[in-house]
Length: 65
Image (cartoon, rainbow, N blue to C red):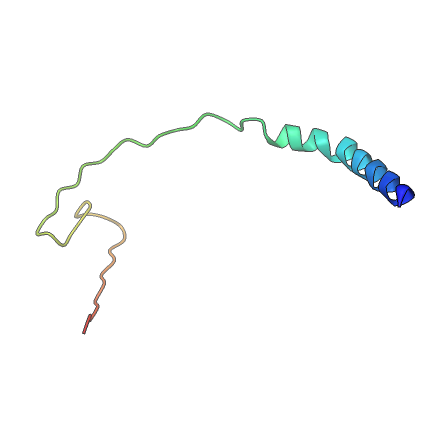
């Protein structure tokens, strides 16, 4: 049982040495966080949201009966 525990500890140390630097490198900040400007779209008739000249229009039809 002691041998299994010793082998486990050695394996964990080897893995930590091999993978540790990569994990530390991956946790570094990639770049600057950019916050998009807020847009205030008024509700046209209570059903629409967004600019009228949008490139994509999504229409949803549903029946809740």
